[in-house]
Structures are given as structure tokens and as C-alpha cells.
Length: 106
Ligand SMILES: [Cu+2]
Image 1: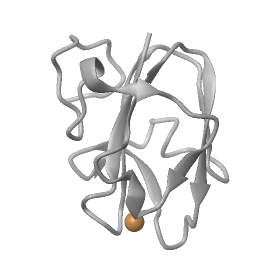
Image 2: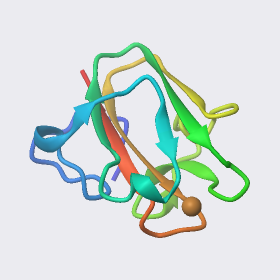
Image 3: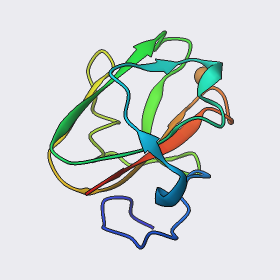
């Protein structure tokens, strides 16, 4: 399943649905506290800033621990992710299974 498409609102991505996703904060704390709190929604284009240790917690775009190499999240630099298009974008930490979430961008 690709994550770049516009899926329906009931689509579950990395445990997230658009219905329960929260507004994207100015800075997303990228540590264990993201577990259960990583579901976001907003309006593209936008930048999302993750703050954390990317050596301990490699931030990768994708779903169900499968990296999507074309995801803007996979291609982030220093935790700042630039989304230029609407879509649904999952992400996860490649070291810790519970660190995951998704962006639902209109
Ligand atoms: Cu981690």
C-alpha cells in the first residue's frame, strides 16, 4: 500500500486515523513519548519539525515498518520534513516498534 495517495478518512495508517489525528505542533518531540501520540493532520504544503535524537531514533517514512524511499519523511534533513503535496504519510522509528504515526494532509 502506498502512503502518498489520498485515502479515505477511515484508513488506518500506523495506528492512526484522520478522525482522531491532532493538529501538528510547532515541534514534534521525537522520543518514546510519541507512542500513541503520533497522529497528525494539517494542510499541505507545510514543514513539520521533529526534535529528538535521530541516531537513537532513526526517523523513516513508511507504513508497518516498511520504508518508503520516496517519502519526504525518509528524505528529511535534521528532522525537518517538507511536505509539498497532500496525502497520507506514515512514519516510524527503525529502532523501536512502538514509535510510529502518520500525517494526514489535505
Ligand atoms: Cu526509537
